[in-house]
Each structure stands twice: as structure tokens, then as C-alpha cells.
Amino acid sequence: MQLVAYLNGERIDATQVAHEQWRALVDDRNYASLVLIECGLRASRVTLRGLQFFRHHRDVACSIEHKAESEQHLTMKRALKDKINAAAGWHAEVEHAHPERAWIADVMSIHISGKRLAFEVQLSPLSEDEYIRRSQRYADDCVGVVWIVPDNLDWFRIQMPMIVTGFGKTSALPEPPELLMDLAHFQPVFGKRASVGAALDAILAPSFRWPYGTPEHQLDEISKLEEIRAKAAAEHQDRQARLAEEKGLDEEKAKLQAEELAARFIASAATPAISAAGPVRAANRIWATEVRCLKAGHPMLIWRLTEPPPKRTSDGPMWRPTMENFDNVRAHVDTWLAVAGSSLAKAKVFRVGGWPVHRTFVCPECNQLIQGRWVSALPPAKWTLIAETSVSTAWARDVPYRKTPAQTTHTQEKAPAQRPPVKVEESDWRFIGPRRKPNWITEAGSEELPYFLVAKKAHAERMEQLRASPRYRVSPNGFRFECADCGGEFEDEKEGIHADGGCLILGARGLGGR
Image 1: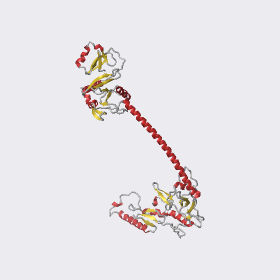
Image 2: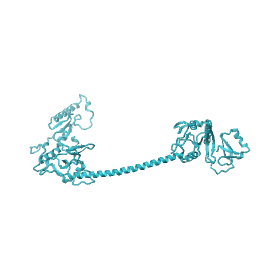
Image 3: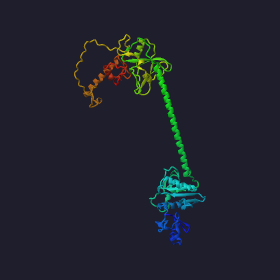
Image 4: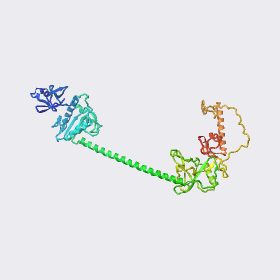
């Protein structure tokens, strides 16, 4: 289907020929010279469902592949031509060809100023490269191109003037064709929803300018931007490589410095310079060594409860000193220093924040931190045993703060008295198991209330005994107690766990005593 043909050298637009003239065209004496615009071969005029167009004569075989234009395509071209001709200063022609047939515009609009806009109706899918090629072909001849498409082609790399219609190859044909100008859709030239006619009027306005440039210009800008991004990415990668190298050098330098400090600390450590001083009697085994802080060289004594390992492997876990900030441990250290007659200062214990909580030693003079890995690296030869659970030397003595367990004078222990089994009722505080009903909703006349009152009275008496005991110190809330012997704390109902098992010793406190 073609809308333009030549009759005896005269251009005939099928959309502009009246119906009577169109019917009489076959009676023209030059009708046999009617040829198509693209191939120059003989044509015939055709009327189909009220639509006038040209096609090859039935006796002609054409080797040129003409565009297969649908009725929707032809109807849209006619509607565009009528709309452009109605605009002031504009004239439209369908099937306007380049003098050398480089392109044939579906609808060419020409302004009285000489400005030309080619409207291309594209209802079939087309690749982006083909859009670019055909658009640049118009731009090379100083002709602007506007694409009439069914849907918004927002996936393109470049920007093109487009009017979106929503009208495709399978859409119903309107009657009359001018109704196509009323179709509303999102228009890229506006950035909002508008009708096809409004978008066309905006493009035909004298003030309309296309700010993005030709496709070739946009591709050049995209190429430059990609080069800039690639250069920036390469520079960023080089910068990251330099930073990684510098970081590696800094880490290596810091490692060497740390090893040097550790070596200096180990070299300065020695067994305490105290002659004929043996270990004291204590609840734990305690080792001690004399070290110097790396800041000012102050001597100090540090200690630990863990036996020094014979040799620490690089793959094994790093030893951390057992927490020493308890009175019963420091009391052993003080006793040993007093027995040995040493004036060596003890290191202070500093609590390191975070979780889990750790403690480490600091210099008592300058508060210089003693790293735990330095202490763990000390060889066993630099440690001295200063406290032992059982010693037989002349220096052995008990620490004054700890009470000696009372010795029994009976030669034979009495067998525990046999108690008859007691049936524990549901209301008793010793009852274990699901209850039929809460005891607080028991009525005053029930049988469970006396048992509940007896249990409550027994609990109050037991609390009074705990508060009156000189062995325990009660907390302000009255329900937590502290043992004066070992410093352990327990709730009122946990006193039996604490007392029956003996006073808790350092390092063996469990959840039952806290």
C-alpha cells in the first residue's frame, strides 16, 4: 500500500484526492503511466473500506521490497497530515521522498520559515540501532525527525523526539481518523500524560527546541562519559592497591614493633630477687614474677593462678591471666611479700571493657598497660611459686583473713537421725508439681490455708536466722546475703547450697552461689 504515485510526472497524493476524482482517475488517458514513487513501475489506484491508496498493477513483477503498510499505519499518516495542515504556518505531505531516494518520510511537515520535520510512524518493533541510523540520516540532511510509536521506548540509551499514541497494528480503526489525535498517553516530550494532538502542537510550536542533540552527538557524549568512568574506576583500583600495600607495610611494621616490645618485656622479666622465701599456705597455687614496665622501667610483681605452660605453640590459643582482682588472692601475695621481706611493689589490676570482661595488669607508678600476650609469652623459668595449698617449709603460714574450719572433737561421727517420711501437701512450700489451684485464691475456710500460713512462718523464721548470723552480711533489699569468709553471694533460698558445700573458693563459683 502506497499513498503517493506519479501520473505523467505529476505527484498524486491519495489522501488529497476527492472521491469523485479518485473514481474518475481510471478514465484518464494517461492512467497507464501511473507509477509508484519508490520503484517507478506501473501502479493501480485501489479503494478498500473507504481508504484510498496505490499498489502495483497486477501484471507487474517488482524486485524492490516495498514497505508493508497496514491500514492502521495509513490511517495514522492521514490523521497526522490533517493535523499539521491545520497548524498555522505548516504544510504537510505524505510519502515525501529525498531527491536521491535516501529516505522517504511518512509525513513531511514544512514551515514557511523553511524548517522541516519528518514524522515517522513506526507501529512494528524496531531495534535501537535502526532508530539511530534512520534518525541520523535525517539529521545529516538538516531535517528533524519525530517518531510516532505505540509505547514509550524508555530503554533507549539516547533520547529521541517521540509521540506515544498507544495505537498499534492490531488496534481498531477510528472513524473518522482525526479521533487518533485525542488518544491520551504518557508523553516523553512533556514528562506527563497528554493527548497525541497536544504533543504534536507542542513540537510544531516555534519555541520548541530539542535539547539533547542528534543521535551521533549523544553517542559521542556517552562514549566520553564511559571513558571518564573507566578512567575513574582504574584510578580507584590503583588507589585501593596502593592503600592495601601501605596497610600491609604498616601492619608488618606494627608487628615488628610489637615483637620488639614483647622481647624487651620478656628480657626484663626475672624471678623475684628474694632468698630463702618459700610459698605460703593458701587455697590456690599462685605463681609470681618480677617485670618492668616498658614506659619508665618501674619494677613490679605480677602473679597468676594458672600454671605456666612449658611451651606455647603459635597455633595454640593465647593464654590470658586468670582474673586476680580478688582480696583472697591479693592477700596471699601480700603475705608472701611480708614473709619474704620484699619491698617490691605489686602491679595494679585494670578492668578491660567489653564482653567478655577481662582484667590485666598496669604499672602502679605510671599506669602503663601490661599486655596479656606479653605475660603469656613469659617462659616457666621466670615464674616462682609463692602460694601452695599444702606446704611444709618454715615459711609456711596461713593468711589471716581466712578462717580455719572448726575441728570436731568426737572420735566417732554420729549417724544421722532417721526421720519419718513426711507427706508434703499441695499447700506446703516444699511441694513440687502442678497445683490444682493457686493458694492465693483459697478461701479462708479451706484446709490448705493453715499449711500455707505454717510455710510462710517457717520461711520468715529462716530469714531471721540468716540475718542474725555473724557469718553473713545482708544486702539492702534483705533477700541477698554475702559470706564474710569467702565473699560469695547467694539468695536466701540458696544458703543451703553455700553452707552444705562449704564456702566457695575463688575460681570455683558457680551459678548456685551467685
